[in-house]
Amino acid sequence: MIKEMQQEILRLKKERDACILAHSYMSEEICEVADFTGDSYALSVKAKTAPQSTVIMCGVRFMAETVKMLSPQKKVVLANPDAGCPMAEQFDKEIIEQLKESLPGYAVVAYVNTTAELKTVCDVCVTSSSALKICRAIPQKDIIFIPDINLGTYVANNIPEKNFKLLHGGCPTHARMTKADALKAKAAHPGALFLVHPECRPEVVELADYVGSTTGIMEYAQKSDGKEFIIGTENAIVQHLQFRCPGKKFYPLSKDLLCHNMKVTTLADVYDAVRGKGGEEIVMDEKTRLAAVRCIEKMIEYGG
Image 1 (cartoon, rainbow, N blue to C red):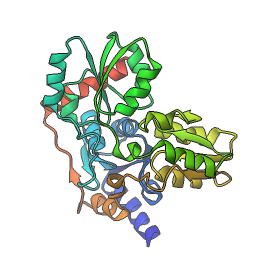
Image 2 (cartoon, helix red, strand yellow; image 1 turned 135 degrees about the vertical axis):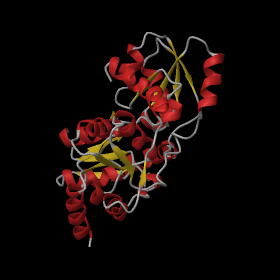
Image 3 (cartoon, rainbow, N blue to C red; image 1 turned 90 degrees about the vertical axis):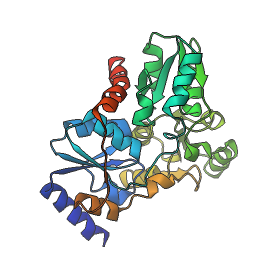
Image 4 (cartoon, helix red, strand yellow; image 1 turned 120 degrees about the vertical axis):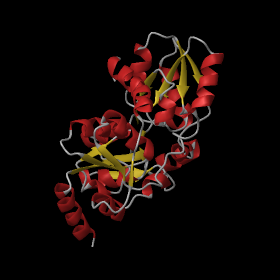
């Protein structure tokens, strides 16, 4: 049973000196056995200060890479090796190097949802919650923003004094949502506040009462005096909020707002990983790690 497997995971992680990280898009039963839950970058920071020697990432590959970049001395395991991120894999290092050559003087700003290899040729990293602050803070007026065109558009619209070069990449899960989806949800729940992730299309974001990161959406819903909310990000957040705020109502923007890469990780995968019978250890050569972590260090320097 779920409870029995959870109890065994909790026992094993203590026995094997393992810390479990669960991204907020994981299922509730996985989040319940995690040491930390939240957005990808926040999890990697938590892993850095955790006393355990092994870190098990319940998320996607770029998240496990970020943990390894910040905690090279630790063993980092991705709970399910098939958990990738289409957005992180849309552009490779060579394409961005060529773009930098064609646009001299531009700063390359990389969303954290990128591979470690791609980060090696970027100037500064951002999260969805820090993108506005970092892009305002960097000295360059001209910015190449990769890979998410929707987050990039949101940032560009809020910082008109800077010039943004955007690429046609992004999160296929959030990008599937249309204005028609948003209007349908708002019509079905006219008293609900609409909370949206900036990876959604601009025409969806324009209809929102609040725009923010996954953590920001959850915090807003929990603190708000509102009683009903339409959640414009991965549907796992609807489930988590239902547990945390049983007196409030939460509705998905669409039943199709599901990330199949996140959903591939199961509680059984976590069980196998914590007992050393599953998952994939993330291995990164020191040259790549140092080159990739540089843009994260720049983000911290600018206040991210």
